[in-house]
Length: 297
Image 1: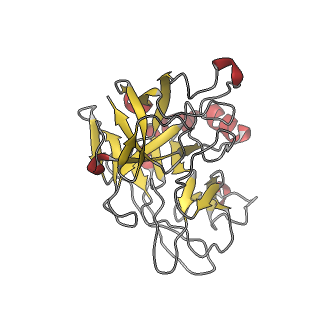
Image 2: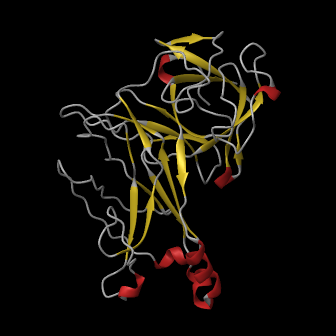
């Protein structure tokens, strides 16, 4: 578990799960007897903010968008990827699934957006060659690839120039990490290289590991808060975890990180702010995305 120190500082990012289905599509799957053994669950995780690239520099999305497939029907899927990029076309990234049925899009970056403040990620499911045209979606969206029978579109991803070093305010809804949010913790020497390592839970040992090829979405569960930091419990509405109605996460809070896919739960830790390589023990402001933090056991 990371402690304080220059070589163990972590940056925090907030990924979002993307799930899009229609009621008609779900009813068709449930009613068709042949579909039960071939159903596939696709889950997409991505960051809610991205740094803009300048010139020839490429600031890759961190953490990289991840696509997970599960259920019995996943054995019938075929990998078919393509990659293209131009100044006037959306960037497409080539990747493949690993032995855990996880695919990471590591080469995606934001560039040529001019004054755009956000963008969206799109995932197309393409029908194999020779498949019936009935699989294809006739009500095709402008951003949907030709021949795609299903597509997923993410929520808007905010574009920033660099991580904010200013004290975050609880009323700034977009930049605060909130109780119950899914986050990613990572450590990088140079922000534009593939040497970034992510905090992950090893599926064999069920322990913390630092890996460059995979990352785990971690839910933030607040155990206790510092009295002079967080507002009274009755002062903020409580909605779904991680939503804008949830309470902001404050420095000095005691938290537990939960990885639900592997039923992993960390020991209680205190989250501290880090500035210029130094630990700020008395910080009590809300935690913002892409800021450096330290976790104390």
